[in-house]
Length: 91
Image (cartoon, rainbow, N blue to C red; front, side, top):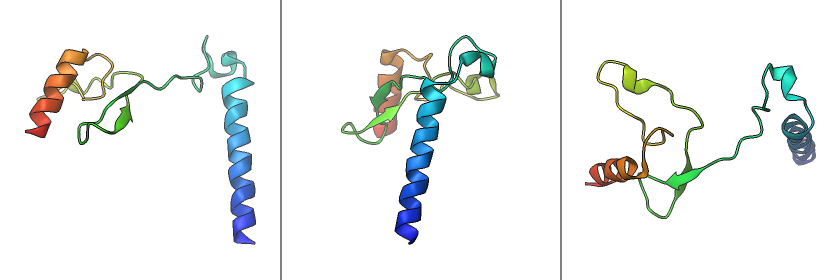
């Protein structure tokens, strides 16, 4: 019974998320674009060159705090800066 319930809930959540992504007018969110229709950009993981991690869609502005720096997955970083962060981390 629990397995069937889990599958039913999973199926409903998937259907609901697809509805959010594809059917709802962006005006409902007060935007021109639907915030659920994002394309995930993948970058190399800090930990392993074989793994990919998603890049953030927006900058969190952590670098503006005292002692803050750009996050590794910040979209404002250039690929060269990201490569330097990766090399420093792996050393």
